[in-house]
Structure formats: C-alpha cells, structure tokens
Amino acid sequence: MHFYSLRTGWWACLLAPNYETMKGFTFTKGDFFGGLTAGIVALPLALAFGLQSGLGAAAGLYGAIILGLFSALLGGTYTQISGPTGPMTVVATAAIAGFIQIGGSLENVIGAIIATFLLAGIIQALMGVVRLGELIRFIPYPVISGFMSGIGVIIILLQLFPAIGQPSPPTTFEVVRQIGPAFSDINVWALLYAILTVVIVYLFPRITKTVPGTLVALVGVTILSVVLQKDVEVIGTIPSGLPEMQIGSIFTIDANFYGQIIRVAITLAALGAIDSLLTSVVADNVTKTRHDSNRELIGQGIGNSVAGIFGGLPGAGATMRTLVNIRSGGTSRWSGIIHAATLAVILLAIGSYAALIPKAVLAGLLITVGIGILDTRGIKHIRVVPRTDAAIMIVVLLVTVFLDLLTAVGVGMVMAALFFMKKMSDAIGERTRIEPLATYDNGLHWQNRNMPVELEGNVLVKHIEGPLFFGFASGLQKMAEGVVDVSHAVFRMEEVPFIDQTGLYSLQETLLTMKERKIKVVLTGLLKQPEKMLRDGGIIPELIPEKDVCPTFSAAVDCIVDELRKKERPVTSID
Image (tube, rainbow, N blue to C red; front, side):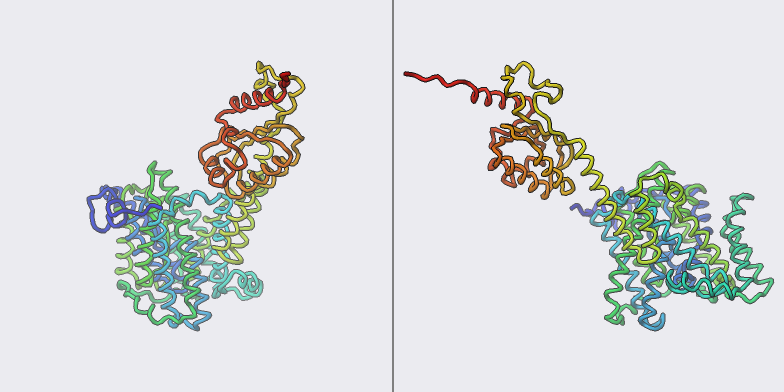
C-alpha cells in the first residue's frame, strides 16, 4: 500500500505552493467568466438542494461555497466545480429525516447531522490518502447506470408533493403510497409555477445559451409569484451573513446515534467518491487532460468536512456545473475559486430576496435535475445489452429507489461479480481441451519422434486457457474425471496467468485422482505466479517431481517419448 509522501501528497497543497501538486493556478480571462457562470448556474441548485435536505436553503449555499472553494484549491481536477449534488442530497435528506424521527426535532439532532457530514469528509479524504480513488474504474457500467437512474427517480418522486403545494413524505415508499390522495388536494398555482419552471429550463436554451435557463426560471417565476401574490409556500428567511461554526454541537450527541452516524458517513463518502470521480472523467474527456483521482478525493473530503462544521450540505463534483465552467472558458483552479466567491457575494448581497422564492419553483428545478440524472442511454439499450447487464441495472435501480443506495451498489457489485465469474468459467471450460497427443495440433508434435504406433493414444494433452480460480475449480475436476486411462498426461499451463487458493486445491485433487489411476502428469510452461503457488502449496515436488516440470511443450513431449520408448524396449538376458 502506497501512501502520499510529504512532497507529493496533500500536505504539499497546504505547506508548499511551489510544489508540482499546486499546478493549475495559471489565471486566464476564461477562468473569470467560467467561474462566474458556474456560480450563477449553481445558485438555484444550491438553494433547491438545501431546501430538499430539510436543513434549509442556506445549507445548500454554505455547502456550495465551502466545498467549491476547498475542492478547487486541493482537488485533483483543475476545472471541476463542486457543490451539493442530487445523489449526495438524496442520502443526506434520508439521513436527516431519520435523525429527526428518532430525536424529535432538528434542533435535537443537529449535532449528529454535523458529526455525520464531518466524518464523511474525513473518510473520503482517507480514501484518497490510501489511494482507493483508482478503484472506481472497477465498478461496472450497469451498476453505475442503475444507481444514477435510481437517484434520478428518487429526486423526481420527492419533488412531486412540493410541486403541487404539499410537504413531501420522507421516503419514496410513502410518496408512492400517498400520491393518489395527494392529487385530490392540489394547489393549482404551485403546480403552475412548477410546470412553468420546467418549461423555461428546457425551452429557454433554444432562445439563447448566454444566460442559464435555471437562473431565468428561478428569477422569472419568482417575480411572477411576487406580482400575483397567490397563496403558495415560499422558502422563507435565509441568513444574509457568513455561516457560524457549529462544531460544538457534536459534543452533545446521544450515544444512540453513533451507529447511524457511521453508516451514513460511509455511504456519503463512497457516494461522493463515485460522483466526483465520474465528473472528473467527464472533465478529462472534454479538456483532454488527466485528473489525479486520489488527490481529488482528498480535496473533496477536506471540503466536505469543513462545510459540515459550518452546517453546509455535503456535495461532490457536479457534472453540469463543471461542463458550464469549461465551455465558458475555465481552465484552472481559479475558475472553481471564482465560482465559490460568486456564491458568497450573492449570499451577502441579496440573500434576503431569496426568501421570496416559491418552493414549487425549486421543486420544478429539481425535477429537471432528476430527469437529467436518468441514464437514458442505458435505459434505451436495455433490450439489446446482455440480459445479465439488464438484470443488474434494473435490480440496482429498484434497490436504490426503495431500499438504500449503498446496499444497491453492494448488491450490484455482487451480481456483476457472480455473472462475470460464470462467464469466465464457461469461457475457460470452452477453451480448455483434452486430446490425444497423436492428434493434438494435427499430430505436429508427434512427427519425426519414431514413436511406436501402438502407443500413439497413450498420451493425453490437457491445454488450460485462463486463470484457475474458484469459478472454474469444479469444472477442472469434472474434466479430469472424464480422462480415459493412459500412461501420461501433459498439462499445458502457458496460458494460465493466475491460480487462486481454490484453484490450487482443485488442481491438487485432480492430480491426486490421476496419480491413483497411475497416470503420470507432466506440467509445461508454468508462469511465475502459478509456479510459486504450486511450489508454496507443495504440489511441486511432492506430487509433480522436478523432472516432470518442463519449460516447453516440446521438451515435455521429448521426455515422455524417451520414457515410453525405454519401457517398450525389450530386455535382453545374459546367459
């Protein structure tokens, strides 16, 4: 395991600005416009996510400002814009609702909430320190597709009630159960504002992309609401100053919350890592650069920890905001810093006006976010992809929506691993073959060796192609059971790159069975790892003597031919 050193790791970000890790601070005019535009786009989303979480719209702004600043300074993707995102807000919302259900009120559980966000950031940073960021590439696409689509569905479901002027139930189960009765009591004006918001978000970019459609919808529909003065619920007062540190509240946490704090923190850390690194990959594809995944996790973790201390909502790298930044000219860390500064200025200057924003408008914005998160490409291709991939995606989606996000990823990974092992086992079984030496490769290895004709079928060749692992262990033994009685068997191992413990024991059982049947086994072409496993496991030299371990197949054939010839040579007696 490699850890960050003082010179190459996150310490350098804090202590030595001239180190290579501080690349990306070359300021350009594009960074100013990229950061400014990204900040404007982030404003309505930050307010909406904060309101959805249950902590209030200000929590979304605090999270966007603090995480946006620290991830820009310390992260591993120069152009990434970070802040509260749909996936992170879904987890945070469920956690906050769970805490309140136990504690009775937000004031009683604020310490547990702050501790959860703080711990999530610490875990995320530690993931980067121990270099777990590189493992994100091993998550199969069907798992990510079902996971992200499930989050999109959750966001849409949880905004249906606010869009019709009613408070949303805390869980998707309750939303589905209560949605019928809720539509019998619709606030028509709230629904109108929500629909108008969605329409503006989708149609305004056809007029111009200079001004973000989300901002136009937020400002325009809010002004309309103020002018019409209809009975719709607004988000209420937002603190106009900078946030206060709330670290003291974590020292009054009830011990009953400890388990839930740890579980939710792990979920947020894992989800934040996936969300951020996926956005980093998107940024790399657009800018033709390469991010540092472990450094990105460290920056995100520190940002989320600090944001949590100040009551800010946790977040991650935001794909849409990052693309807006890049397309507006952002190329360096300065764009992310300016994005955070823009939000801070808005908070200080016009925070009081945000109190007039109808909740239905923010619900409309979040519905568009949920639709954008849906993996429409994966859903469209569900009929043409392998059935196993489709099954994984559907199961992960359903578990995400109705059970738990981290459980969904775990279930998806287990399913993907099992299906992969089944496919690998079948492929190895199809490619592994047993043939008599006389006909193997059209008799090429038999020619010109002066072998007696009656012995041509007395040697078998078992050519194994692929790793000997637990998925193929039973297949190996079944194939060995079908071997006819011969004097010798050659196990070709040139294409066996790896043997695990199960494969080792399976091979050992196979060799013991063949030894009982008086079949002598010769191994050829052992690679480094398999040979070490066989020697450490005692197969060589206890079951297979050194002389029967040959470097090449040709050498093994020569050895067997010589041995068989000696056995068939008549013994002359001396009187």
